[in-house]
Length: 386
Image (cartoon, rainbow, N blue to C red; front, side, top):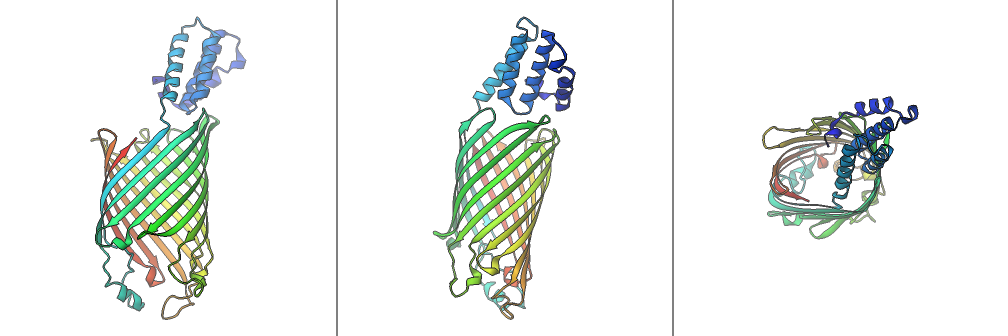
């Protein structure tokens, strides 16, 4: 498969130089189909690549290229047949969280913050996660999958804040190429439910669509859109306080640009998303702008991967909050700046295991003191992938 390491510009040059319509020579027609097969294989279209190489073999069976072409075709067929339909991941870990109940930062202008600061808010804990996806349909260009995932945490010192999440999904994708650039189009529907202290907290129906374009070995662009309907198990009386009803819909559109190096061993990324939370209660409706950035660097020792992700979500709430601040309710429109930093190191281990260390810092700056908080979570986990 050394042929597949040629650059795409080499494929384009070969295809231009050996256009099938320019010659009637069987040898040159075979060479044209052979290079076409190489190009399609590198673009991630093995079915079309195999068809082109079959035509190359038939064009000149006695050619010197026939032997290498047959071996390349057989290799592509074996690779395609060997692709697993089932993928799975299991993770177990231990964490320390310094603000489990998300207690607000102290603020002398809001009396409630002083009272809440005396509540215990730190805890160690354990986490477990399971994910499985099965490709029940797979052709040269189409793939359809069904998936399930589970995630749960147990807080040793604050078990009333234990969470459990379950998600089921159906997805489909179509693989093609535009001007010799691989293009992946796809969509997914998912339903998930989150429990807090063994009581369901929120249920969500989510539909999303995406497109990924590989412009070159260096650049990859993704665009996506999402609709999500949310149904909360309200912890307050929404009949008496209708503005606090959090049920509603979220609309989002965005994109991410990747800059890739050394066959994706290193990369940089930057993205932007616009979202609108259209809630039943006026206190929770917002228009948001999210900026993302990050990267990965793979060390030359033991293939250790160092990752960093930055997420900045700016939320402008559309209506004055009806209950806050407690000293002057109904006078302030909430504005939040949520800043999340994640630093992660991964050490690949034998038998498909990975040891991971992660630090997550969340800083939420808000003009309503009860929503301003800081939180730090330190996690160590072992992940097994299939």
